[in-house]
Image (cartoon, rainbow, N blue to C red; front, side, top):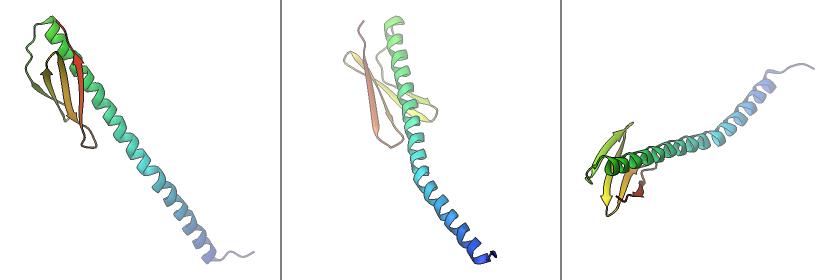
Amino acid sequence: MKCEKGSVMLEMLVSLILLMMVASLIFPQTLLIMKERKNIQMKYKAQVLLQEEAALYLYENGEMLPKVKEEEGITYMLRWEDEKVCVLWEDVRQHEMKRCRYVEK
């Protein structure tokens, strides 16, 4: 059998096309996973801020004033609504998120 340059080129082209198809399927899923991981980190940080604010109020007689905290480039707004403290922030998909915690003295 003799090797012809045209068949080698065709095999390389088919391999490249298959590689591009696999990459086009995997890349968007990887980005989605990374965004969701960031959202989970934001939610965890919001929960920590809620716990800190509740502890300040309960144990150090903190005031029920609205606060704005900047953490790792994310702006968290803490505000009091009746007997609960809430934290608001914007997630990776630009949706406004809200978590609240009841606090009784």
